Length: 321
Ligand code: UT7
Image (cartoon, rainbow, N blue to C red; front, side, top):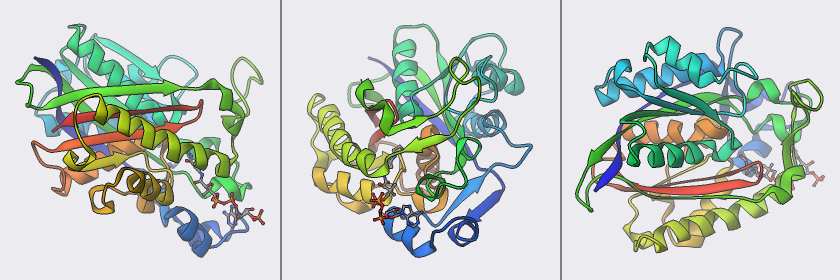
């Protein structure tokens, strides 16, 4: 059967690290509060020369090297981001140019923190229907540029970074590698719980992130457990078959609560929220790259990716490495 096979992963982080202690000098917060409520200890913050596009390009170059493919092999680039370099054109087109990929399909995808799952599902569908052969799927964000740095309820939670994967359409046996299933959901009723208060068509400004964290938290645990259960049940797998869960890294307590609901041990959950904070669409491919490079995720593993974010949007992907 034709499947989208994971060929390589890569990531890139801004050079500057901002610790909780440093933030506590700017807003009324403490390292203890942030660690206890979120698990976050530090985040990377982009400098003037670092943008979503430069981070995405660096992450994609690393993923291509890991895959052993060259830029000219890539005929599809989907970049998940809510913080593009420009309102248009798509940052994916800049990545294509900077890597020297040549002419192909390139576009951005906007599903905030679920963006990488949405992009992965879209690339998978396009690869399996023959629209492309080798895809770069990237999650890249510079949320530091849309944070209200005087609002302690949001500014301590997010960070910048990028992660990327290379997928290739390959004929594989049913128990072979590749994306087995994806499930996507959106429910526009909860827009006011997590949004940015600006945009090109309304205020003409970029705007700042606003969130009612406690409410988002409640929805996140329920929706994530449901969609993971769905992707497993519908493909005939049990949670005990899963080698690794690579979740969107919003809050260590969400990761723990979701895993507990499904009876998955915390040692099978890849956690990077302590170092990266919440990097929105970048968090899953960043965490995936960490776990592939440190040897935890190995060929033949069954891996679940899951995310939930503004919209609300949420989704999960089940794949074999
Ligand atoms: O990626 C997209 C999805 N996003 C998420 O999944 C985020 C989901 N939400 C969360 O992760 C958590 O709700 C937060 C980490 C945002 C907040 O944790 P919480 O345990 O839900 O705290 P809370 O909002 O109920 O606030 C508790 C208290 C409040 O004080 P009062 O009203 O009880 O006096 C806040 O004002 O903590 C206060 N607080 C802070 N204190 C110190 C809020 N932010 C801070 C802070 N430092 N940075």
